[in-house]
Length: 392
Image 1 (spheres, rainbow, N blue to C red):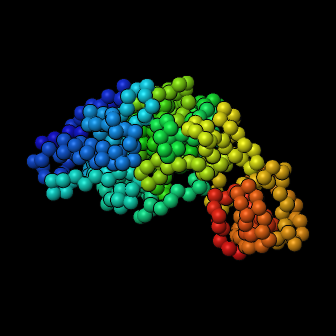
Image 2: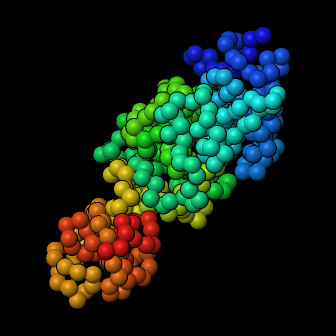
Image 3: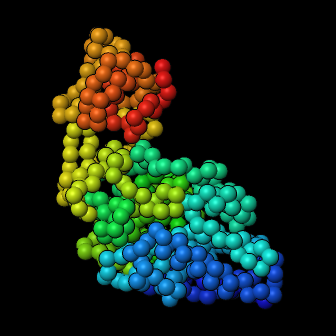
């Protein structure tokens, strides 16, 4: 008997689901209604996980609001998207995950993106391409989010856009504050880091990055319709818009971005995006971004400097125009020029020397730059309290 799966219509008009017969499937139990069983299993798992990480959906999330879409199937495997829609015009944005399922002994074993189980399962899944398996990450997901996200802002490097909403939850004020809103520029939203892109819903694209990271882009107009396409940092994803097909609200065209880590939204406070340190305010949608000593509050403009490398730092002169470079790790060594506030420097190694206090605290660590000079770590933002390229 043919296996029936739901998948998006080719045009994704109104995000309606279409039932399509897919032939050639060789499930372990050909007499079982594997398609219906898969839908119900993924739905059950999705609601269970969401009840833990999205308590704001408790009043609205049910089976009628789930959209399970199988985008690929092969052998005993199925892969697709699982979305919980929310009321349009409300505070809550939709919840969505990629799922991978293996059919064995009449049961589906379902895992969701960003988890160690998903990564482990993906290594054997014939439904995935080699590129997807590589993009989904290492054998173990990193334990904690790294402030050095290696991400740029979600528009072209060299452009300036407005930060229309400071740190807030994926759904309004709900914690964690994983989201930001941006508008302006050429209105073309771009991937913040290379990865593998999936269309979760009309107006919503997710890019999976290495290390358990993912970025979400919502309210898009003319978004790309992809299922596992490799995208480079800066790749076009769609235009800023007001789309709320799967729920939520949008007042004025913009892009609502969200940072995920290990299958859940994660706080952006203290992270570096586009060489800006993002900091929260006293309430949702407030806050600022800091580049060196330059601070921009909500409503202000951010220049996209590109991503910060793992062995790089941003000079923070803590209100001054520049920082002295030395011939060795301490003020007892001679001055060897200076480096401007906000400049990006590359670090070759670190060593302890004289102690100094900057914006981020007191430290005796000095960093040797790739030109052979030294700068106190008190005047560099690297995203780490320790050496980012080993000890000298």
